[in-house]
Image (tube, rainbow, N blue to C red):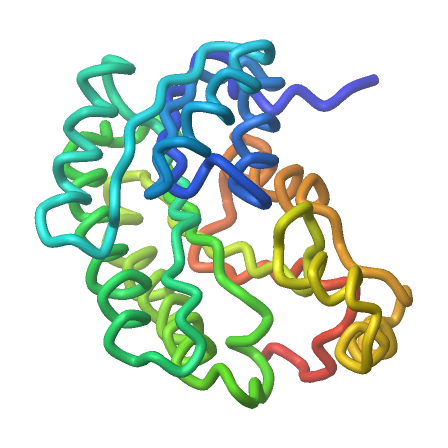
Length: 250
């Protein structure tokens, strides 16, 4: 017996949907029968991804930079016009700026908040609408060399927890899915693997399974959290990190 996630026909906007985790999330929703709109800053990569994704279902694409004032609202308006409404927002964009506080805050906090607020303005009450932010296990542990990134990801968890209480009366959910160390072609861990140096060996030792995660392993969790099967889940931070985070969430 299979579990029907009841995502068929759902209208989904996914930011950063052209590569890595975002690409896998897009495929997961398309495979569940959702109608999807994606964006990315790299138009060339976005067009190529959209061509690939077209084989899985209905997908629309538009270049966007969430860190630019006004772009989040414009993106949401476009998605709503294109899809005829909005049921699910997956905020997957990050500045990935390491120690750069200004860039990290502009994209991961200010831009993401603008995106969410715009999306909420188009979501219908009591219809299963929900928001998912992609976080990071860096928010739950010490992260040398990337303090700004870790801090804004921790702030994302707090932001979504507060938001979930605010919008619950509308019957809308909000959650965070926090990946651990994920490897995909062209990503930072893929480069570390190719170089096969000290960093790669260290990260393998830090992961109890002695491997890194695959984007699809995050995407499947995101699809479940967005589905009616998770209808009582809100304000949660779901760590999908292969047990690499040693602290306890209380």
